[in-house]
Length: 211
Image (cartoon, rainbow, N blue to C red; front, side, top):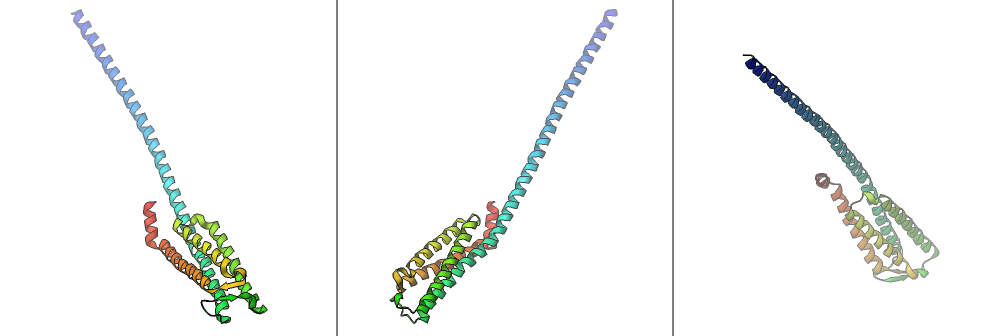
């Protein structure tokens, strides 16, 4: 009978050890997975905060960009439009006030001193305005779309051509000046339409989806 008692005692010990080992292993596994789960939760929290920060920053940057854009576009258009007005005034002085015939070339050396001074004053004002407008454009080009930037550059190139030819060799070439002036005026009208399109709600909504 003693051997039976010893057998059952040994069996109980082995069973107890087996249960203890199983319990310890389970605890170890649970501890490992709990640690991993907490680490994963922490990583997810960090990633979530980073994503929130990135989204907030992008929204802030886009908002700041959009705000600046809505300031720059009207101001730049005003610069360009004022140049258009000054060109019209200059040509009006040259053609209407002096009763110059259309489609002819006029010798500026035959102008009176008063007429010459008036023309050159107008031309000087136009040159100064062009310079200011060009500087404003270059300072804010970062906030312009590629399309707007290209159109404005075209206008300034045409302006340079017009101003170069306007009173070249003391001659007012009416046909050439009229053609160049109309070209600039048409491009300014096209620029205005592009400004309006890009500042409209539909264009803003389209860009918002892209972001």
